[in-house]
Length: 244
Image (tube, rainbow, N blue to C red; front, side, top):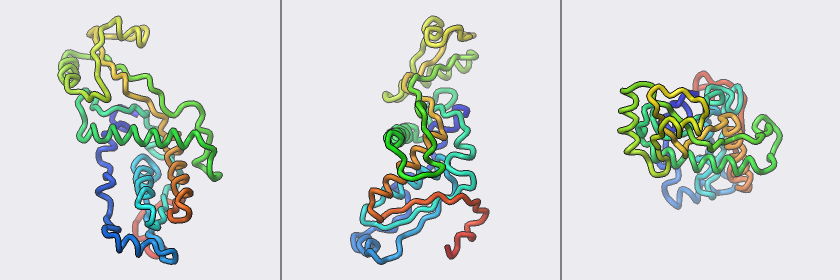
């Protein structure tokens, strides 16, 4: 993908967990929802891309006494749409190096979810199916990202923005020699580049598969209190879910 797809520009519009429906605001209501014979709360998540799997993961992290079932609908499968073919450049900045809206918050969330996915991918798959394809050796490459300055205007903007970078994802200004040590024979029109050593390159499909596996593992660990199901079906109208 381009720089604006997988990094927190896409994450910044996702709901925070604190903004999810408050269906268990009191201890009494929470207790009543945990009665073993009571029908669990059911959630439908439309789409198995970045936003969909993110929402499913946080739903499953609801209080352990809450019984709920999450159905993720996607006719192609985990990461089978636009999310799965994005380029996976991960950092909290715009193409001109400006910290994105809620960039710091989203960057922290990204790092946490990557840790969750990598941990899940290191375990044997819980069940057979789409989400359990071999993850191979590459889910995240932590080599940083180098961005050459292409014109004077961009150089000035990025230089200014670099001064306000996050401590957890610094932006360094490097000269021609420094840049070409990182990327030999790199063309540098202005003999200057910006290096983000903490930035990453993520394999989106493998990341999403691993995060869905983490969802499955979380549901399994709940001893029947939580359930997640991938439904390979296209939903054109939410009214199609009525009565299910």
